[in-house]
Length: 493
Image 1 (spheres, rainbow, N blue to C red):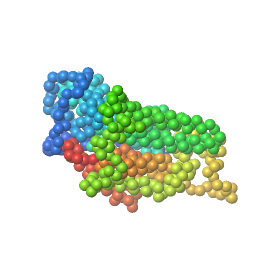
Image 2: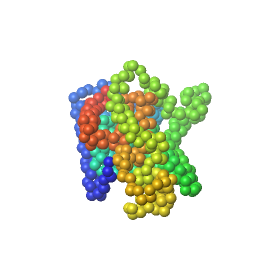
Image 3: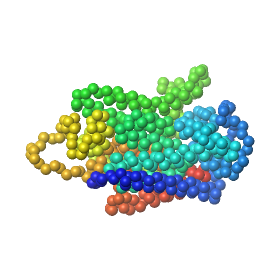
Image 4: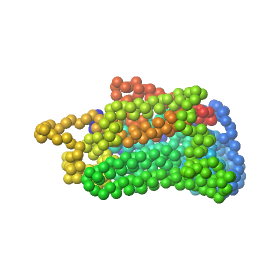
């Protein structure tokens, strides 16, 4: 795979094209949702039940009947499955123990918008409909931004604008599309996860840490984004030791990881304070007595039966089949990378060539060296880097031997910069298959960039063209199936 020149004009045009496809995909999904709802009756109608909040609060007051009840009903019909919890939390706060399984970023956004920008609509369509509208706005806008950030990140990592464009368009029509246009936290998680990595590789570490922290405030698996910081810190610490510098980068990396995990930990402490604090030991819930009282783990296990191998039952075979396409794509992308670059996998990325490391220097090198690599003129090597490269070169017997040609894996999906993404995808895939409700894997893995990068190259390779058609067929089928089942309260992923 040869490195392709990146033309700024072409970049802007492709970015606009990605945004166009992202908007079209959202219109398509929302249109299909409205279409299916007009033809079918919901399987479960209990979502329309809206009892008063247990504790009176400012936002959940008494309001007159809405003026446009039909419009209100259309919006409230979209409050299904987990959306019921998100809207209820935004309206009434965390009333019950099981609601703490839903992290507060999306409810917070809904609550703020319903009190400010969309507050004038409350007398028109009612409070609950306004909150549903806010949820739709947040999710769909976050998705549009996530698609743009994925394109920008893909260009930096793949060094191939065409592959980046294909991957981003595929993301716009991914098989979990229904969740990115519903009142779910997938869009916010995708935005802050993908955007966080983009800012990390672009050199704005403080923004990256903040965005990663927000991803952990949207979904619990957001804390795994600290792994990108750990990967960079590991390589920078090695460089610092080799160059006999202080390894303060380890302390910096540790503090950054703490900041990323802090919102999720703080939310667990908030739950502990509300449920356990000030109660007699005989009255508190069992998890309150644990040495490390983790509310989230208890809720997932007690209320949803989540746990290692607990879903491996014969009756769950249909759910394994439902998740098999996304799991197969994830496993194939991981195995393809590991098989092609075993030295990277076994060495945790340390055996990457200097050329590969320079292409994403902020992910591998110390900050001052990375900045010099970004700003230096082509063909020149800084003095620091000249010494830095020595440790990876074997003594040459022929000093004037011709330079080795570029390896085909230096750029594209098989580049060294993709390695931390593949490791992250591997952790998510293992968790989805062995621990979670496996059918959730479709949306759980849908924000992982390597899936789209791998699929992008399959689509472009002539010998794998039929796999590209199968991937597009899979996406189209799940968009149709998801908009039909999910919107009418039938089980989907």
